[in-house]
Image 1 (cartoon, rainbow, N blue to C red):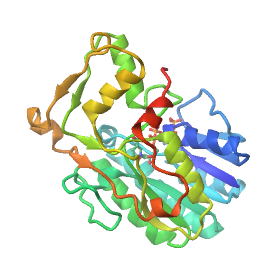
Image 2 (cartoon, rainbow, N blue to C red; image 1 turned 90 degrees about the vertical axis):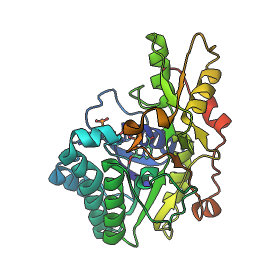
Image 3 (cartoon, rainbow, N blue to C red; image 1 turned 30 degrees about the vertical axis):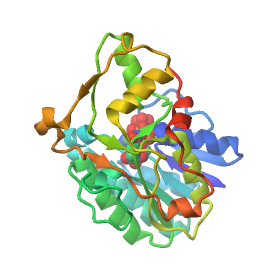
Image 4 (tube, helix red, strand yellow; image 1 turned 135 degrees about the vertical axis):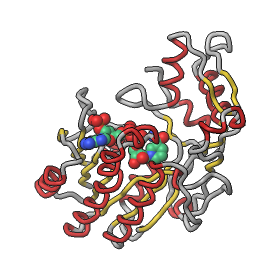
Length: 298
Ligand SMILES: NC(=O)c1ccc[n+]([C@@H]2O[C@H](COP(=O)([O-])OP(=O)(O)OC[C@H]3O[C@@H](n4cnc5c(N)ncnc54)[C@H](OP(=O)(O)O)[C@@H]3O)[C@@H](O)[C@H]2O)c1
């Protein structure tokens, strides 16, 4: 297949591009600020995806079977820091991709987030009402609605959970941040009562690639790992994965009750029900042990 991957320099985009290239697919990918070169790409386009005309002409110059949208301002604090910019990338961009997919007949896979939910009643099904607590989650909800409306028979939107993996920038995954903090003598604070169904970028990419080849599967889907874990326990498992002792790699356990103001916009428990996608794909949700074994120290 031929792919056009937006955000190919990001954690998911780079993992997907490499996987697809290794399996013989042809991937054209976009990057913006990242200048290190994205492995596996047939062609890398440096584009500001906030400029619709630039994206439109790139898409029309490179007709593909599948557009995979991995570009995003994917952290709540960054969305709050620049609401206009994050609206452009998180909402207007996927809407434009949906229009282009419907026009050209390409399939569109758009990535959304577990943060569309409030985190009070897990596990969340795809049919459950959304209730985002932060701007990022609100933007993801709006993107899902627009993509679904503009490309109902071309687009699939996949909500992903907290992701871990080896990022090109070496700072996107929790293990990269923890290892950096430990190396500089910091003691990271992690919540013992905030739960995520963490997934590796590699396993998500495998599921996305399989979904790309199933054009009849349109609409909204969930994908995540096989286990729900607290952020603190995840930190401990990462420490163990790299063979570090508590003295070498200290972690401070904290409770959400310790800091009610800080957690107001953070969903507490984001377990996801993976049906119907998990029934349709051969790819299986990965165990935490498998996910951790794929992590490398930056
Ligand atoms: N990571 C997670 O834990 C997680 C969890 C749930 C859902 N998701 C969703 O999964 C998708 C992929 O996330 P990710 O973690 O892979 O993201 P990421 O690592 O932060 O990468 C974001 C990508 O978007 C690109 N980008 C941002 N603004 C751009 C602009 N103005 N023009 C062109 N490119 C721009 C970046 O390009 P440069 O870096 O080259 O500037 C980068 O390639 C997103 O939709 C995200 O919301 C992620």
